[in-house]
Length: 268
Ligand SMILES: C[S@@+](CC[C@H](N)C(=O)[O-])C[C@H]1O[C@@H](n2cnc3c(N)ncnc32)[C@H](O)[C@@H]1O
Image (tube, rainbow, N blue to C red; front, side, top):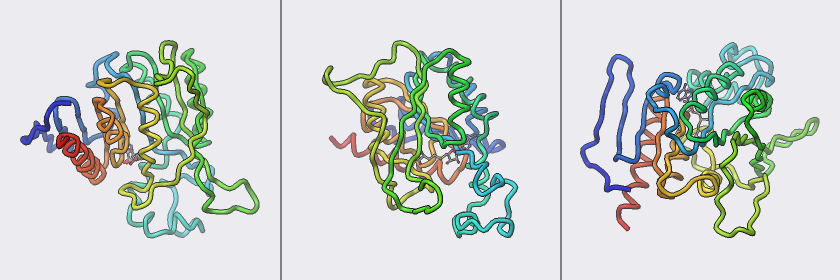
């Protein structure tokens, strides 16, 4: 990593309300819609994608968030303070359907040197990720993040898991420090406390994936960076990082967290 540049090389596009911030030559943060911004990334330039796009909640509790109002659902979440304060954000974060999944994957495939992408997703989305992989003759593994049970549902299986689909091609074997090590498909970790994003993911899971699937100096892309967890994990482990985030508030939270981590590293 090079030393942090105090005068950020910043381009501000007032009309599109997007900001590109190069924290240094190894870290590029982009505030904007990744479906537009990813076009500017060169073909075959990215080593690893680790990302957490919005989920698709079509089954629960019946209508997508974009069609819901407070009065037409009794869901505690949809009536919560968070939902009502952040309604617009929740719409963006809850309707990532097969259409978005497939066009996002087409772009990811274009920019990757060899396909090697880890994508957080929910059960509704899993079949669509698998279908795309099959169609593109790629392999996939479904990894599970198992959380401690917090909400008990007595009539159905309680929801204590989230998923990470790994879509990959030949030439992406795990990089282990000891050849006899092996890794199961389940991560056990608690949800993040004191979150700076409603769906913030555990740093330890991101670090484990980055260390197993990339080398020092590799370029990691997160087109849906939220509060920047992938970026922090990448920088902590001496990787380069490109992050995109559409929501200005989260973009600046991510920028702050990544800057803090860069400063801490430059002290040592
Ligand atoms: C599930 S959250 C990611 C949370 C992140 N893993 C963390 O630990 O903070 C998904 C993020 O994608 C952003 N987003 C949604 N659509 C986007 C788009 N088209 N381009 C860029 N960001 C987008 C949302 O604003 C949200 O912050």
